[in-house]
Length: 399
Image (tube, rainbow, N blue to C red):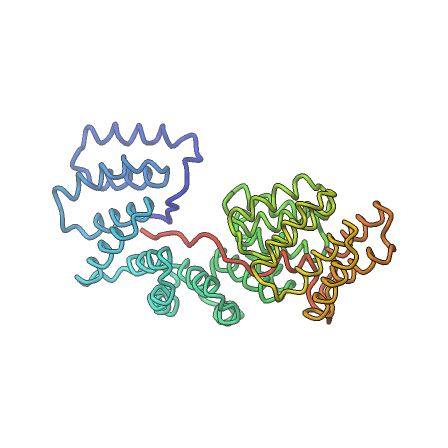
C-alpha cells in the first residue's frame, strides 16, 4: 500500500467511479483478497472508513491471523485516531516477530500522536539509520518529535547528518520542510529559506515548508511573497496557529488591518499562550485606534509573563495614546529595565514627547518598527510574533 493520509478527503472526481467498478468486480470474485485490498486502500485514502472496515472485517473473519490485513486494520484505526486500538494491534504484530519497517514506523506515529515523544524517537532512530529508503518519512517524524520538545539544535544536527553531499537516500520533502521550520526557530533565516525551497521543489504543497518560506520572506520584508506561501499553507491546514499568526503579521504590514485582526484572533483561539501573537493583536488594535482592545491584548501578554519588556512597552504605547503620561512613563521604565532595546518602549517615548502626533506618520513608523530586522539590542515586534511555536501535524502512517 502507499502512503496514506488519515484526514484526507476525496480530491479526485474519479474515486467514486473507480470504487464502483472495483465493487462490481468483487461481486463476481468475492474471495479475491487482492481486490479487497485495493478497495480498502482506495476507501481509506478517500476517507470512506466504513467501506474500508467492511473489507478488513471480511478478510479477517476468514483469515484472522493474516499479518498484512491486521496491519491494514491498525492503519484504519490510526486514520480514525483510535490510538489505543492501533497501539495494541501494532504491538501484537511486533511481538510475534513481524519486522516490516512500516509497522515500527506506524507504532512510532501512534506514540507521537499521544505525545510519547521519547518513545517515538527511540523507535525511529534505527529506522532512520537502516531503513530510511523504505520509510522515508521516519526522519521527518523524528524531527517533529525534537521540534515539539523544543530541541531545535538537536533537530538541526540530526537533519544536517542526512543532508550531507550526495546522501543516500535523499531526505524526503517533509524532512526538508520540518528542518526549515527548525531553522526559522533557530533564527537561521537564510538556511530556512534554502531548505524550504528544497522541499517545495519536490512537493509544492509541503505545508511546513510553505510556513517556513512564508516566515523567511516576511523576515526579509517580502510581504506579498510571504502572503502567497502562508495562504497556501492555511488552505491546507486551517487549524495551525503558527500559520495564522504569521499571516496576521503579514496583513499588518500590508496594511490590511481587518484581515490582520481576524488572523491574530484565530491564531489566539488555537494557541492562547503565545505572547508574541498577543503583541501582534495589540499593535493591530493600536493601528485600528481601538485602544481599549489594545490594552486588553497587552494585559493578556503581561498575565502570561510580567518579565517581558515588549509587553510593558506595548502597554506604554497604549497608555501614552490614552493620555496617561505618568502611567506610560512607568511602563516605559519597566520595559527598558527588562529589555534596553525595546522598540515599543522607544516608540512610547516618542508618543509621550509629542513626536508622533500626526496619525499618518504614526501608522507608517509603527509598521516600519514592526518589520525591522533584529539588531544587537534584541528582537523586533515582528520577531516576537514569529518566535518559536509548537509545530502542527504529525507525519503520515505507512501501510
